[in-house]
Image (cartoon, rainbow over all chains, first blue to last red; front, side, top):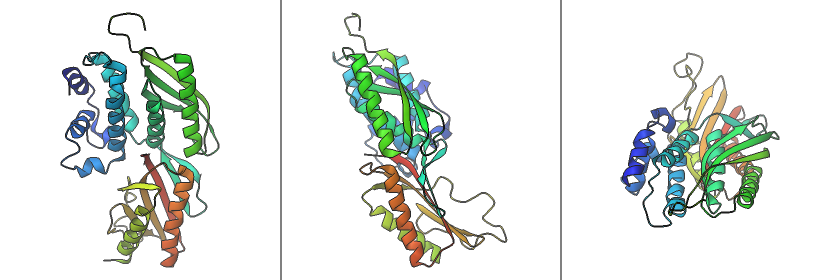
Length: 201
Length: 109
Protein backbone atom coordinates (compact mmCIF):
# COMPACT_ATOMS: atom_id res chain seq x y z
CA UNK A 1 0.00 0.00 0.00
CA UNK A 2 1.47 3.38 -0.93
CA UNK A 3 1.97 6.16 1.62
CA UNK A 4 -0.86 8.41 0.48
CA UNK A 5 -3.36 5.57 0.62
CA UNK A 6 -2.10 4.54 4.05
CA UNK A 7 -2.41 8.08 5.30
CA UNK A 8 -5.89 8.35 3.89
CA UNK A 9 -6.93 5.11 5.56
CA UNK A 10 -5.66 6.36 8.88
CA UNK A 11 -7.57 9.58 8.40
CA UNK A 12 -10.89 7.90 7.90
CA UNK A 13 -10.84 5.40 10.74
CA UNK A 14 -14.51 4.75 11.33
CA UNK A 15 -16.40 4.00 14.48
CA UNK A 16 -15.97 0.27 15.13
CA UNK A 17 -19.70 -0.42 14.80
CA UNK A 18 -19.64 0.71 11.17
CA UNK A 19 -17.76 -2.43 10.18
CA UNK A 20 -18.60 -4.83 12.99
CA UNK A 21 -15.62 -3.82 15.05
CA UNK A 22 -13.12 -3.42 12.22
CA UNK A 23 -11.79 -0.38 10.42
CA UNK A 24 -11.42 0.07 6.69
CA UNK A 25 -7.65 0.16 7.21
CA UNK A 26 -7.74 -3.25 8.88
CA UNK A 27 -9.76 -4.62 5.99
CA UNK A 28 -7.28 -3.22 3.48
CA UNK A 29 -4.51 -4.96 5.41
CA UNK A 30 -6.55 -8.17 5.36
CA UNK A 31 -6.78 -7.92 1.57
CA UNK A 32 -3.06 -7.23 1.36
CA UNK A 33 -2.50 -10.47 3.25
CA UNK A 34 -4.73 -12.33 0.80
CA UNK A 35 -7.26 -12.89 3.60
CA UNK A 36 -4.86 -15.04 5.54
CA UNK A 37 -4.92 -16.19 8.20
CA UNK A 38 -8.72 -16.33 7.93
CA UNK A 39 -10.44 -14.03 10.39
CA UNK A 40 -13.93 -15.34 11.14
CA UNK A 41 -15.01 -11.99 12.56
CA UNK A 42 -14.38 -10.49 9.12
CA UNK A 43 -15.49 -13.43 7.01
CA UNK A 44 -18.79 -13.69 8.88
CA UNK A 45 -19.59 -9.99 8.70
CA UNK A 46 -21.76 -8.76 5.81
CA UNK A 47 -20.53 -5.21 6.39
CA UNK A 48 -16.93 -6.33 6.12
CA UNK A 49 -17.72 -8.36 3.00
CA UNK A 50 -19.34 -5.30 1.39
CA UNK A 51 -16.30 -3.22 2.22
CA UNK A 52 -13.85 -5.87 1.02
CA UNK A 53 -15.71 -6.20 -2.28
CA UNK A 54 -15.65 -2.45 -2.72
CA UNK A 55 -11.96 -2.28 -1.86
CA UNK A 56 -11.21 -5.00 -4.39
CA UNK A 57 -13.13 -3.13 -7.06
CA UNK A 58 -11.32 0.06 -6.09
CA UNK A 59 -7.97 -1.64 -6.58
CA UNK A 60 -9.11 -3.00 -9.91
CA UNK A 61 -10.50 0.29 -11.17
CA UNK A 62 -8.11 2.79 -9.59
CA UNK A 63 -5.30 2.18 -12.07
CA UNK A 64 -7.67 3.06 -14.89
CA UNK A 65 -8.49 6.31 -13.15
CA UNK A 66 -5.25 7.30 -11.55
CA UNK A 67 -2.34 5.25 -12.69
CA UNK A 68 -2.55 5.53 -16.44
CA UNK A 69 0.88 7.14 -16.49
CA UNK A 70 2.34 4.64 -14.06
CA UNK A 71 2.54 7.17 -11.24
CA UNK A 72 1.23 6.30 -7.79
CA UNK A 73 -2.01 7.92 -6.65
CA UNK A 74 -1.22 11.19 -4.94
CA UNK A 75 -4.67 12.59 -4.22
CA UNK A 76 -5.12 11.83 -0.54
CA UNK A 77 -8.45 13.67 -0.37
CA UNK A 78 -9.84 11.59 -3.19
CA UNK A 79 -8.74 8.33 -1.61
CA UNK A 80 -10.15 9.44 1.74
CA UNK A 81 -13.47 10.29 0.21
CA UNK A 82 -13.77 7.02 -1.68
CA UNK A 83 -12.68 4.93 1.29
CA UNK A 84 -15.01 6.83 3.58
CA UNK A 85 -17.89 6.15 1.23
CA UNK A 86 -17.08 2.47 1.22
CA UNK A 87 -17.01 2.31 5.01
CA UNK A 88 -20.26 4.20 5.43
CA UNK A 89 -22.12 2.31 2.70
CA UNK A 90 -21.01 -1.08 4.02
CA UNK A 91 -23.05 -0.57 7.16
CA UNK A 92 -26.08 -2.85 7.08
CA UNK A 93 -28.61 -0.20 7.98
CA UNK A 94 -32.30 -0.97 8.22
CA UNK A 95 -34.12 -3.90 6.68
CA UNK A 96 -36.75 -3.40 4.02
CA UNK A 97 -39.30 -5.91 2.81
CA UNK A 98 -38.03 -7.46 -0.38
CA UNK A 99 -41.16 -9.37 -1.30
CA UNK A 100 -44.31 -10.50 0.46
CA UNK A 101 -43.55 -13.79 2.18
CA UNK A 102 -47.08 -14.62 3.23
CA UNK A 103 -48.33 -15.02 6.77
CA UNK A 104 -45.45 -17.15 8.00
CA UNK A 105 -42.41 -15.45 6.49
CA UNK A 106 -40.66 -12.11 6.49
CA UNK A 107 -38.37 -11.77 3.47
CA UNK A 108 -36.11 -8.75 3.72
CA UNK A 109 -32.95 -7.19 2.41
CA UNK A 110 -30.66 -4.80 4.25
CA UNK A 111 -30.13 -1.32 2.89
CA UNK A 112 -26.43 -2.14 2.97
CA UNK A 113 -26.99 -5.03 0.56
CA UNK A 114 -28.89 -2.74 -1.82
CA UNK A 115 -26.17 -0.10 -1.63
CA UNK A 116 -23.65 -2.83 -2.38
CA UNK A 117 -25.60 -3.88 -5.46
CA UNK A 118 -25.74 -0.33 -6.78
CA UNK A 119 -22.08 0.27 -5.99
CA UNK A 120 -21.11 -2.92 -7.78
CA UNK A 121 -23.19 -1.99 -10.82
CA UNK A 122 -21.53 1.39 -10.98
CA UNK A 123 -18.01 0.06 -10.64
CA UNK A 124 -18.73 -2.37 -13.46
CA UNK A 125 -19.24 0.55 -15.83
CA UNK A 126 -15.93 1.31 -17.57
CA UNK A 127 -14.39 4.58 -16.49
CA UNK A 128 -16.48 4.99 -13.34
CA UNK A 129 -15.71 4.56 -9.69
CA UNK A 130 -18.60 4.85 -7.28
CA UNK A 131 -18.46 7.14 -4.29
CA UNK A 132 -21.49 7.50 -2.08
CA UNK A 133 -24.82 5.76 -2.70
CA UNK A 134 -28.03 7.01 -1.11
CA UNK A 135 -31.73 6.24 -1.46
CA UNK A 136 -34.65 8.61 -1.05
CA UNK A 137 -38.16 7.35 -0.48
CA UNK A 138 -39.73 4.27 1.04
CA UNK A 139 -38.25 0.93 0.15
CA UNK A 140 -41.52 -0.98 0.39
CA UNK A 141 -42.36 -3.40 -2.44
CA UNK A 142 -43.72 -1.49 -5.42
CA UNK A 143 -42.46 1.86 -4.19
CA UNK A 144 -40.59 4.37 -6.29
CA UNK A 145 -37.15 5.24 -5.05
CA UNK A 146 -34.67 7.92 -5.99
CA UNK A 147 -31.08 6.73 -6.17
CA UNK A 148 -28.36 9.31 -5.60
CA UNK A 149 -24.80 8.43 -6.46
CA UNK A 150 -21.48 10.21 -6.49
CA UNK A 151 -18.85 9.06 -8.97
CA UNK A 152 -15.33 9.63 -10.15
CA UNK A 153 -14.95 9.53 -13.92
CA UNK A 154 -11.82 8.72 -15.84
CA UNK A 155 -10.38 11.41 -18.08
CA UNK A 156 -11.65 11.11 -21.62
CA UNK A 157 -14.88 9.30 -20.82
CA UNK A 158 -17.82 11.06 -22.50
CA UNK A 159 -19.75 11.88 -19.36
CA UNK A 160 -23.34 12.35 -20.65
CA UNK A 161 -23.37 9.06 -22.54
CA UNK A 162 -21.57 7.16 -19.79
CA UNK A 163 -23.85 8.60 -17.12
CA UNK A 164 -26.90 7.47 -19.14
CA UNK A 165 -25.47 3.95 -19.31
CA UNK A 166 -24.80 4.02 -15.58
CA UNK A 167 -28.36 5.15 -14.82
CA UNK A 168 -29.80 2.39 -16.97
CA UNK A 169 -27.53 -0.21 -15.41
CA UNK A 170 -28.41 0.80 -11.86
CA UNK A 171 -32.14 0.93 -12.64
CA UNK A 172 -31.92 -2.53 -14.21
CA UNK A 173 -30.11 -3.99 -11.20
CA UNK A 174 -32.71 -2.55 -8.84
CA UNK A 175 -35.54 -3.87 -11.00
CA UNK A 176 -33.95 -7.33 -11.10
CA UNK A 177 -33.18 -7.71 -7.41
CA UNK A 178 -36.01 -5.83 -5.72
CA UNK A 179 -39.65 -4.95 -6.23
CA UNK A 180 -38.70 -1.27 -6.24
CA UNK A 181 -38.75 1.04 -9.21
CA UNK A 182 -35.95 3.55 -9.59
CA UNK A 183 -37.94 6.61 -10.58
CA UNK A 184 -34.74 8.62 -10.85
CA UNK A 185 -31.03 7.87 -10.69
CA UNK A 186 -28.90 10.92 -9.99
CA UNK A 187 -25.28 10.67 -11.03
CA UNK A 188 -23.20 13.42 -9.44
CA UNK A 189 -19.76 13.60 -10.98
CA UNK A 190 -17.59 14.50 -8.01
CA UNK A 191 -14.22 14.08 -9.69
CA UNK A 192 -12.81 13.84 -13.16
CA UNK A 193 -9.39 12.32 -13.29
CA UNK A 194 -7.22 15.01 -14.79
CA UNK A 195 -4.44 14.08 -17.16
CA UNK A 196 -1.03 14.03 -15.52
CA UNK A 197 0.32 16.74 -17.80
CA UNK A 198 -2.03 19.21 -16.15
CA UNK A 199 -4.28 19.66 -19.14
CA UNK A 200 -8.02 20.06 -18.86
CA UNK A 201 -10.14 16.98 -18.28
CA UNK B 1 -28.30 -32.33 20.78
CA UNK B 2 -31.77 -30.82 20.98
CA UNK B 3 -34.50 -30.99 18.37
CA UNK B 4 -33.81 -27.37 17.52
CA UNK B 5 -30.15 -28.18 16.97
CA UNK B 6 -31.15 -30.81 14.44
CA UNK B 7 -33.65 -28.46 12.87
CA UNK B 8 -31.23 -25.60 12.35
CA UNK B 9 -28.48 -27.92 11.18
CA UNK B 10 -30.79 -29.45 8.59
CA UNK B 11 -32.01 -26.07 7.42
CA UNK B 12 -28.48 -24.70 7.13
CA UNK B 13 -27.25 -27.71 5.17
CA UNK B 14 -30.13 -27.53 2.72
CA UNK B 15 -29.79 -23.79 2.19
CA UNK B 16 -26.04 -24.02 1.68
CA UNK B 17 -26.70 -26.52 -1.12
CA UNK B 18 -28.83 -24.01 -3.02
CA UNK B 19 -27.12 -22.51 -6.08
CA UNK B 20 -28.71 -19.15 -5.35
CA UNK B 21 -26.90 -18.90 -2.00
CA UNK B 22 -23.29 -17.76 -1.68
CA UNK B 23 -22.99 -18.13 2.08
CA UNK B 24 -24.82 -17.96 5.37
CA UNK B 25 -24.05 -15.33 7.95
CA UNK B 26 -24.57 -15.47 11.69
CA UNK B 27 -27.91 -13.74 12.17
CA UNK B 28 -27.58 -10.12 13.15
CA UNK B 29 -30.02 -10.48 16.02
CA UNK B 30 -29.71 -13.96 17.39
CA UNK B 31 -32.30 -13.67 20.11
CA UNK B 32 -34.85 -11.10 21.03
CA UNK B 33 -33.75 -9.07 24.04
CA UNK B 34 -35.24 -10.46 27.21
CA UNK B 35 -36.59 -13.60 25.62
CA UNK B 36 -33.84 -15.88 26.81
CA UNK B 37 -34.46 -16.62 30.45
CA UNK B 38 -38.06 -15.56 30.57
CA UNK B 39 -40.11 -18.06 32.51
CA UNK B 40 -42.84 -18.33 29.90
CA UNK B 41 -40.82 -17.87 26.85
CA UNK B 42 -38.12 -20.02 25.49
CA UNK B 43 -38.43 -23.75 25.29
CA UNK B 44 -35.16 -23.97 23.48
CA UNK B 45 -32.87 -21.51 21.81
CA UNK B 46 -29.64 -23.29 21.21
CA UNK B 47 -28.50 -23.71 17.66
CA UNK B 48 -26.09 -26.39 16.60
CA UNK B 49 -25.32 -24.38 13.50
CA UNK B 50 -24.76 -20.76 14.40
CA UNK B 51 -25.67 -19.52 10.94
CA UNK B 52 -29.31 -20.43 11.37
CA UNK B 53 -31.18 -19.80 14.58
CA UNK B 54 -34.45 -21.18 15.81
CA UNK B 55 -36.27 -20.35 18.97
CA UNK B 56 -39.65 -21.20 20.35
CA UNK B 57 -41.63 -18.48 22.03
CA UNK B 58 -45.24 -18.85 23.13
CA UNK B 59 -45.58 -21.90 20.93
CA UNK B 60 -44.33 -20.19 17.78
CA UNK B 61 -41.08 -21.42 16.27
CA UNK B 62 -39.06 -18.57 14.79
CA UNK B 63 -36.32 -19.36 12.31
CA UNK B 64 -33.92 -16.70 11.13
CA UNK B 65 -31.57 -16.96 8.17
CA UNK B 66 -29.12 -14.24 7.12
CA UNK B 67 -27.39 -14.90 3.82
CA UNK B 68 -25.48 -13.71 0.81
CA UNK B 69 -26.94 -14.46 -2.61
CA UNK B 70 -24.95 -15.17 -5.74
CA UNK B 71 -27.09 -12.85 -7.82
CA UNK B 72 -27.63 -15.51 -10.48
CA UNK B 73 -31.34 -15.40 -9.73
CA UNK B 74 -33.35 -12.30 -8.88
CA UNK B 75 -33.25 -11.76 -5.14
CA UNK B 76 -37.04 -11.86 -4.59
CA UNK B 77 -37.30 -15.29 -6.22
CA UNK B 78 -34.19 -16.51 -4.41
CA UNK B 79 -35.45 -15.58 -0.95
CA UNK B 80 -38.80 -17.16 -1.68
CA UNK B 81 -36.98 -20.35 -2.62
CA UNK B 82 -35.02 -20.18 0.63
CA UNK B 83 -38.23 -19.69 2.60
CA UNK B 84 -39.72 -22.70 0.83
CA UNK B 85 -36.75 -24.81 1.92
CA UNK B 86 -37.23 -23.71 5.51
CA UNK B 87 -40.96 -24.43 5.27
CA UNK B 88 -40.21 -27.88 3.91
CA UNK B 89 -37.97 -28.71 6.86
CA UNK B 90 -40.48 -27.32 9.33
CA UNK B 91 -43.29 -29.26 7.65
CA UNK B 92 -41.20 -32.40 8.04
CA UNK B 93 -40.89 -31.66 11.73
CA UNK B 94 -44.65 -30.96 11.86
CA UNK B 95 -44.08 -27.41 13.00
CA UNK B 96 -47.00 -25.36 11.77
CA UNK B 97 -46.90 -22.38 14.13
CA UNK B 98 -43.86 -20.62 12.78
CA UNK B 99 -42.32 -17.38 11.62
CA UNK B 100 -39.50 -17.47 9.08
CA UNK B 101 -37.19 -14.54 8.56
CA UNK B 102 -34.88 -14.55 5.56
CA UNK B 103 -32.58 -11.54 5.36
CA UNK B 104 -30.41 -10.80 2.33
CA UNK B 105 -27.29 -9.25 3.81
CA UNK B 106 -25.37 -9.07 0.55
CA UNK B 107 -25.37 -10.10 -3.08
CA UNK B 108 -21.96 -11.38 -4.14
CA UNK B 109 -21.72 -12.31 -7.82
